[in-house]
Length: 500
Image (cartoon, rainbow, N blue to C red; front, top):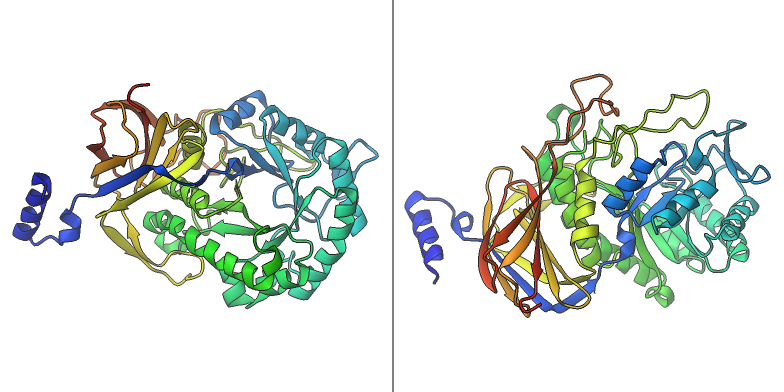
């Protein structure tokens, strides 16, 4: 038994502390055991006409590493396209005035960033011929062969977008062939409600829709939000940070449905998440905090590990839950443009940046043991994670040439560092390690302005972010060494192979 372990156990026995709290966490990395490629399409964000396209925002998108846009975001009714005017969105009989109301500009933005465009197909107040025309226009503009999801969240009973399972399946079977005829290379997706719908509010809906439309289905689209809170109780950081543990269970549930309802296509149907975030709105989740970023960093690793083909964070720019605040005026009668101040960045953008710029393209086996845990439970059993949550979570990647290795660790504990013993097999690191640490004063810290009204807006004189990535180095890496992961943080250790 190592001396440090003996000392910890002795201290635990003397003070009466639970043994699990005293045992030192251990991280095991098997650098030669590949798990999966990290899909480039995991780093998407939603894009709608009232968002801005400026040099500063393009620089931000490049720094964040966005590789995919969903257009026009979650809008699937209340507008048409005027193709004779060169392609512009029309709402309430008026052409919208924002640059991104023109698909040509959305395509140009995506191309400038070497990103893709996925499309939400309008299904309310429109026809299969309308959808086919949109597909044809995108193909003509160089965006052919893309992914098209039929509608946005048509499964919430009582909502204006709701369609019964029978009506939605019928719509898919009418729209899909027309769209495929316009561009045979496109991929068609259906909107899935996930466990909250399938098991609680409309039992069996997802299964029914897939069974009835499987001929056309190339992917299913699930919207993943977690960590909602009771408004009177405030934001629960632990509940938010636990949400990433749902990814594995969700993916397993979806694969079981796909295998059961469409066995002949089960290997080809992809699982996408076209909206994901922590708590989405102030009323149900509050401001985007460091806790959301900790959730996001772990969730991206879980998505890569569990076979999610594409993921699109909600969303690029908005006063409440965008990566940055602000908006573009899209109609002369609506709110004037509120430019992004170039300073306020929500913490979740930093989590994305760590994955896109600091982690490698191949995920390798990594696990943490002896981490200790906390328990989270609440009434929303099909939305929030229930059970034991490890304080420490880890993911590891490598470069294509195996000359570098990266470890990402999330420490969910709000007040205690995690001094972990790290064991690396199949890779001999240089002693000097680059370290990137995303943290802030507390798990509920954020970069928005809340002492002015209205909150969440893009105030031009906003302070500098307090939740941010800190860069440093650590000298002492080897095949077996210790490292202290700070409380409420995401840390990336970047190893270079000895001898390079």
